[in-house]
Amino acid sequence: MFVSENLGVNEKGNLTIGGTDTVELAGQYGTPLYVMDEQAVRKACRRFKSSIDKYYDGKGLACYASKAFTCLEMCRIVADEGMGLDAVSIGELYTAVKAGFDVTKIGFHGNNKTDEELEYAVDVKVGHIIVDNISELLRLERIAEEKGVRPDIMFRIKPGIDAHTHDFIKTGQIDSKFGFALETGEAFEAVKRAIECKNVNLMGLHCHIGSQIFDIEPFEEAGRVMLKFIAKIKNELGYEIKGLNLGGGFGIKYLNEHDPVPFETYMEKVSEVVKSTCSELGITQPYIFIEPGRSISAPAGITLYTVGARKEIPEIRTYISVDGGMADSPRYILYKSEYEAIVANKATEERTERVTIAGKCCESGDLIGENMPLQHAESGDIIAVCATGAYNYSMSSNYNRLQKPAVVFVNNGESRIAVKRETLDDIIRNDI
Ligand SMILES: *Cc1c(COP(=O)(O)O)cnc(C)c1O
Image (tube, rainbow, N blue to C red):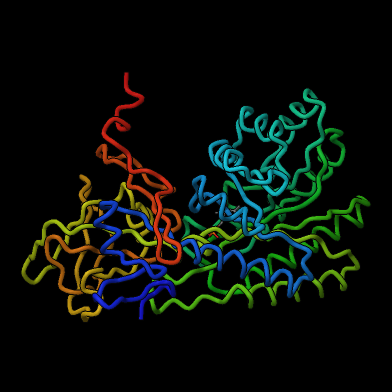
């Protein structure tokens, strides 16, 4: 009935998430409110882990791409599920370290890491650093030499795959700011150089072809391309690349008509391709990493708002304004992302209207969505926007000096605050 499996309706006719009444959550914690379902997060982690066990003999690690949604509590939950983690900045890394995450399972990403970030990553001994470009390689080599260490690194490679997704979230093709290009020979030259570096250990190659991808073929193709490159390195340089990171980007269901491939099928197909390609090429099967972000946190989350004004413009559209907007839900203004919305206190009613849900920020484009099917919404109703657990809180801002909402975790009918709502004093905290 609803887009995410963890949503339901209780005897009061209210929307529930993980069995918890969303209208009560709105009353208890206020709105806007991010709600994350702990069991949904755990279940997604387990599905990735168990499919690696089943289809790739456990020789791999699923690393949660923490940029999708992170805070101390999220790190603790993901760690408890035995996952690895990706961090793309010192802030994400610091969060994971402070949460007690096993640093050996952390991969440190970023296309323009600063020296401060590289030094921090080396100091806390992250599992590996995914190097994006030559200047970074040379800076890391120097830092590692100064500190007398030899960090494991991977190279981020652009495999030249065109995944069918939005231009802004497509990263594997040659015209991308991320990584070394294969086609031009840039990647091969970089590998040669890394092998000569005494203070770094090139242990793997990485690729990430984009986000919200529904097909399996681009992932399979990326796997083949990367393995061929690994074989070339072995044959021409006599060097064995032991790890292969196939990235993330698994599509999720934002609308009922979306039909993502189950992760199990993805892992089954990609494992088959990796195994058969390795035997064709005569190379050892690499240890595999995958980096799901959105697919772990998005379906686990919803955002709750309170309806303020209802504005009907005859023959044009009806605006339903809510008490948040692009500051807490920036994906619409960034790339016209679509969501399902439900009037949480009228969850059993039919969605009889099509409305534009607008935020309260001073931008005409500040919408949660247009032409959204919705129950008849009036001032004071609670609206739940579904599958918002990824790239909402993590991309939120204080635009218009709005206070960032709280994040609440629900778990089997109980709720707890994971991130407090910002106060007005937080808004001026760094002002002098
Ligand atoms: C963003 C990102 C991911 C996660 O992408 P999702 O679409 O959230 O699964 C994984 N790896 C890298 C390198 C990324 O930049």
